[in-house]
Image 1 (cartoon, rainbow, N blue to C red):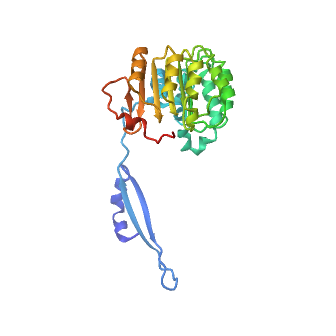
Image 2 (spheres, rainbow, N blue to C red; image 1 turned 90 degrees about the horizontal axis):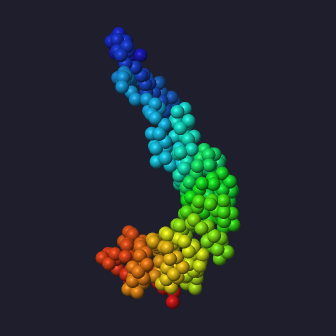
Length: 330
């Protein structure tokens, strides 16, 4: 310690009662031309940090009512609650076990992609969700590249008799048989969504048609279909899903004949959402049929990146550009 520091020692001691004192030693270690080590030069530097402020009106967030926490956890979604929020404190852990939080469940594997600690524990996470739902699960959405989807479906079907809405997105495994078996155990099933998954066989679609309470159906995704199979999905829907109220079709080669078949086979249809089509044009006769059946149709405008209401006569889109963004394979 140098002379200046020694002379001011008493002054610094007087400040220690009201502050914290940190000593940082800056050490310079230099080597000469012939690798000879110079003397160590120590320069003590003192940094004064103000004392911590005592907050008298600190709010105890753990003391909030359970219903407030339940609303917060529901908005936070499933993965953040299971992998993070429940470990904050004992109170949060207790609330995270409430069945009300797991009536509507969204399991998005995007959260897990950024957390290696939990990415390989997906099966355990699903089991935890099903256990905590305690038979009250009404809606579940599984989104992302998921392994062992067959096991998840079996577990859900065995423990969730009240399920009404099931959505599975971007799962490349083949699981039609397991899906049908699971859905047979959901007597209240109203909505089934499969985006970016397998293509239904005729037998599989016939089985889906046996679920009499099914009102909403979404299908399509990343698979490519040949022009010769342009209306295969449409005919499957028209021949089997007669009680639909809402239909969503993604990335298909549906054309006018296919859409007309759907309108004929699904007389109760009220809303249709279409996305990414090459061969479908809404000409006057088709618009007249939609108006007659009172069916609302919305399409995703590929060029303007927005949804267009086909029933609106003032819809802002160019028909040729909207429906012919890809070359036709005549």
